[in-house]
Image 1 (tube, helix red, strand yellow):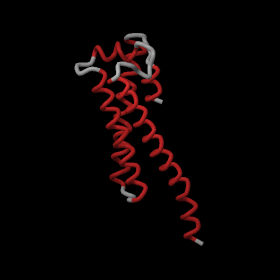
Image 2 (spheres, one colour):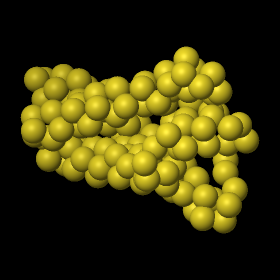
Image 3 (tube, helix red, strand yellow):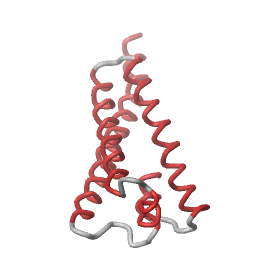
Image 4 (cartoon, helix red, strand yellow):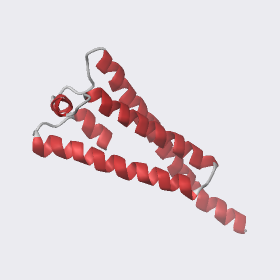
Length: 128
């Protein structure tokens, strides 16, 4: 009887882990699409927010996109590992990456909203 209760309690956790991994993979593909489009001189975003912010960055917009891609790839990798190897260290690393990512994205979004007053649709989607 006790094993049945434990199994029922693990089902929501497994669903949320699978959803988190799926969202991480989709976000990684979304950022990768923007990187590829940048190489061809186009963008997903039709507003000027990213261009204005990227002019303020030392290495340009591609550097920010690569950091985002690596971040989502790490989240996808760690969450897939966490599904099979339950370790508090993996969960802490995922939480740390999420906190740093949300703080960074909040800075960029806040800078666009209050500094340059030009929103970027791509950045808002990634932030969400």
